[in-house]
Image (cartoon, rainbow, N blue to C red; front, side, top):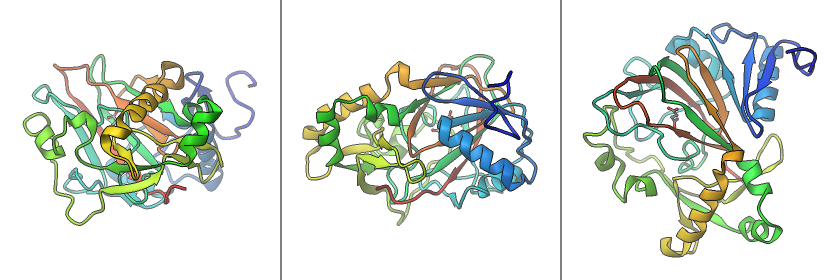
Length: 290
Ligand code: SIN
């Protein structure tokens, strides 16, 4: 680093916020049509830090979507209704009337689809005076810190990921679980595939590094029962979310987080019962995990 500016970047300033992942990026206005040179530095910052944060942005749903489209096709959430005028933007809203929050368990977005999300771009609209932070965890480290024997065993496993009925839903369907507890609109996924089988250890298509692919959507291992799978899933979840693998972000209105779902999990903390939190989320389609 020379002063505050990391010399690897010509257009951006990138400052890490924790030891294992996460960096704050400044020097860029995301509402603009950014040149390729700036985008490629943002990509480098994302690949190096897994989740990157931008402060003091002024985005509307169309400008957030325009930025997101530079990274790939936009994914529509099969269970949650998007905004009336912008179906590709999911408004994550929690008011004092809501008991549950959306995203309040460790997960990687759309792990249950055939091609789980590459990245998610989340913009803070209304933020509680205290609380409502989000946590992320580094799944490269989760994999690399396991013993060689455990890594060898996991390398051969596949997981079955389900969009509904996941463990933090107390065995209920998503609609039953959220009924009367959340004001966001839960929809029927129709014919969309919401159960998928993927390698438990996936290789990141851009960095070539291996990452553990667990989370709340992981229901069981292929060719095993749920009861047989549960103890190992519980161990892996506990390991994958060790505090030293995580970072925590304090939101402000106008903050934006962009994370890589191929090597992280995240968790939205529900600790602001008397306040409102509103976020705009756009998710970018990914590839078939290998
Ligand atoms: C999510 O995408 O899971 C929600 C994250 C958040 O609201 O902080």
